[in-house]
Amino acid sequence: MDNKTANKNHRITTLRRLVLALKVLHKTARLVKYPFLLFLLLLSTEFHQAVERSSMLDSRAQLNLLIEKNNNDFDPAYLNHINEKVDLIVSRSRLNGAVLIAKNGSVIYENYSGYADLRSPRKEINENTVFQLASVSKQFTAVAVMMLKEKGYFEFDDPVYNYIKGFPYPEITIRHLLNHTSGLQNYMYLLDNFWDKDRYPTNQDLVDMFVKYEMPLNFSPGRRFAYSNTGYAFLALLVEEVTSISFADYLKNELFLPLGMKNTFAYCVNDNNYIANRALGYWSRNPRRLIPADYHDGILGDKGILSSPADLLRWSQALSFLPPISEESMSEATTRALLNNGRSVSYGFGWRLKKVNNYDFVYHHGWWRGFRTAFKIIPEKDIVIIALNNTNHNIGHIVRQINNVVLEEFKPELYLLAESY
Image 1 (tube, one colour):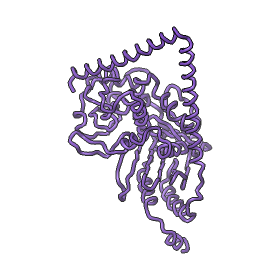
Image 2: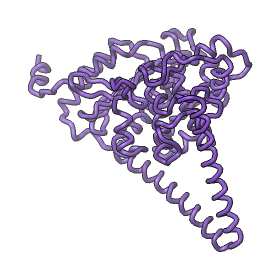
Image 3: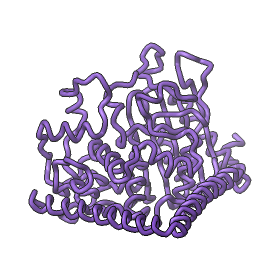
Image 4: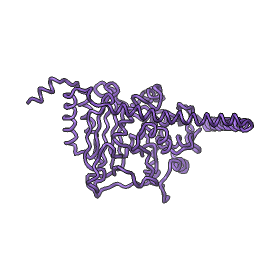
């Protein structure tokens, strides 16, 4: 798409918004002329808000019922088998963090090891300890964007230029950002080399820097896949631009509060100096190697969501039973993206996709400032694996071994036979 076409699209979008605003003003003027109609409007608004509050409470209640299910549906021998095998994996790994496994909506394994703050040994990690999710955050950004698409704010194939003022790449669409095919360069290069202000940068600052330094694209959009933190930072800004609400507040009000995720939020470096139950990130298990926040932490969307093992369990339940997006959107989010040449890539919207032993995996890993994270769903087996670590210790090998345990066919007679020796 050339600049002339992009400018035309931008003007059309602006005119549409102007027409909508004029219609609202006209309707309001008519209602003011007829006070009874204005009263009805206000009454209907209150009713709509009440319905939304009721729906929010209903979602929480339904999730509570799902999570309160006990493990009585499982063969005790199966539970013992899983616990013994995963305990061995975790103990050998020297994990300082949490591992939680759920099947059919019920927890079948959980382990909390070590300390949230190595300088305070009494602060042990538990199900409510809050971890930086790193790139596992991307699925929340993607869901927020999909929610807005379903509400009619935009289409996935719309140019980002139409919605983010000054965005310098008219050929990049929202879909390109979601599936990492935009060709954008890594924003961290810009911050590392050119950020010189005495404050944390915002996502809008990124747009300004990409314009100022005339950053070329690495390839034409849709030509190939290249994992892009920059794309997800711009998606967070997109949410702010079309809603006029901060990204953190949108997630809080539209996702986290409705789902009862009380320990989940977008990290704001200027507002969250103290966070109850928060795990701090370390380079190692050495308490002197704490990793403080720096200017990169001002950017949200690609990272920056903090959550607990218990809240991530709620999130997995919501995705299965009370999805905040439609079944069609969820299907698209977990379908491999297509390049311009028709080839597929192993990424959807906010989720990586692969097969392990012929089972589909929907997952994401994360790594940021001392934190290593993993969130995996095996849809066919209805299994969720959550692994969180705050000492920069690589947990990839732990998760791979857990994959093997939960995928293997359980034969009680073999387990009981082994137990007898």
